Length: 198
Image 1 (cartoon, rainbow, N blue to C red):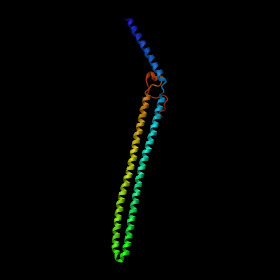
Image 2 (cartoon, helix red, strand yellow):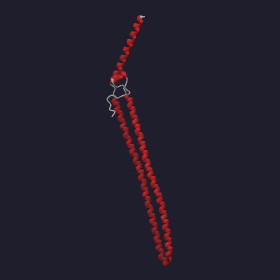
Image 3 (cartoon, rainbow, N blue to C red):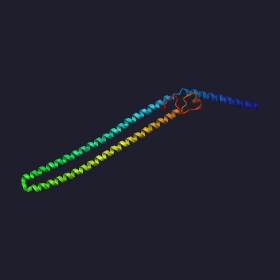
Image 4 (tube, one colour):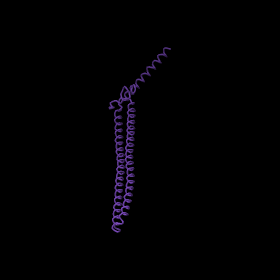
């Protein structure tokens, strides 16, 4: 029986020696791992993704501003067309009144004044209607620009959060790797040796 106990003790001691040697081997294996370099590479990737996102955001804002500029230019042209049309109609009415007066004399002045009043009223109504439409177009353009800006801002914030989440996940993954002799033996402390978390 004593022999069996001695054999069991010997096996236990041999097992402990093998386990100890294995732990030391793991320690030496962990000792040379460059987790700080991997973390720096992850940070570079994050910065590249952020730079790309910044470019995308600038392009989207530029496109939104371009659409707004085009809409305001169209509105300006509509105002100009309305004014020119009103001026042309009023000038023609004045010329018609003068021609009628020249042909018929004083007797036609009441009729000419009446026709002139009708023309002016019609032109005013047309200008008012056009200006109402233009005002609605201006409100729509402004609203569309604001909506576009807010949509771009929200998308930008979401993408920034995604970039940061991926980066933090990668740091956690790298941090779980044993990178010192003692971590190789006892397990990782989830910190990257030599990395500035800044």
